[in-house]
Length: 291
Image (tube, rainbow, N blue to C red; front, side, top):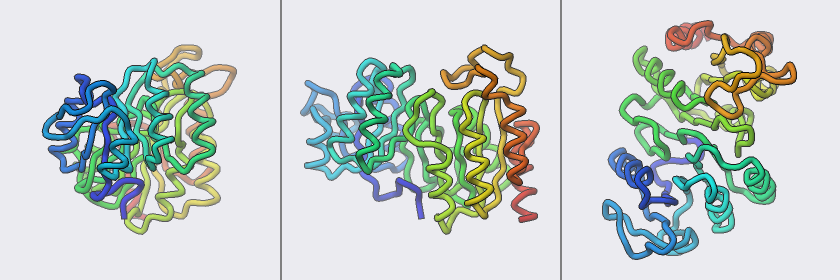
């Protein structure tokens, strides 16, 4: 059982004719993802790698039955792209774009509350169900089908963790990068609920980072609602207060968001926290052997 996407998902690429959109469309097609259409207003009738380009998402939904969207649209227009997919009935949206204005994301968040659409991102690597489909920018070759789920705020750390899991022989059920911006479409808790219900997922790796309280909230939820082993790592442990470390959401301010507070909350919830990123794969293997 896949989470949110599977081999039958039909993908529409918003911003397909841009350099980034074209490059990653090729990569997704090479992985076996069913990309059924692209959207670039004014360029309808063209094709990228044999995939037809349309002017609107609604056309792709109507003609190709697209149900998942991935967005490669510049920040000033990305929120409108998300809203277009929501209004067109897309069920899962992956927004890769980084730097969407916060006020634009407030509007998106409000619209999401009244819909059944799941938004992953923005500022994320996407979602992959190894061996089935890839809706994102992650390197497909480091993944291996299996029973470990990965949820991460960091894109590049997701790749590092997945590579380590694969190296120790632990395949993955689904890997999700939720995004590093202050306002994102779905949280650790949203996806933890899905993995708890997924019979193919036997354990979860959670990658957090400084800033906000998402990891503390996830820890409380895990303590009361998750009975599968969880292994975690918190990035940014040496970051000085007030300094943004890569992501807009990765900043310690107002006394909140410190790595030590997140680690303490996770450990109090019975979660094994890897002290060093380079040991996470082996830590996860040890935890699953003893589960």
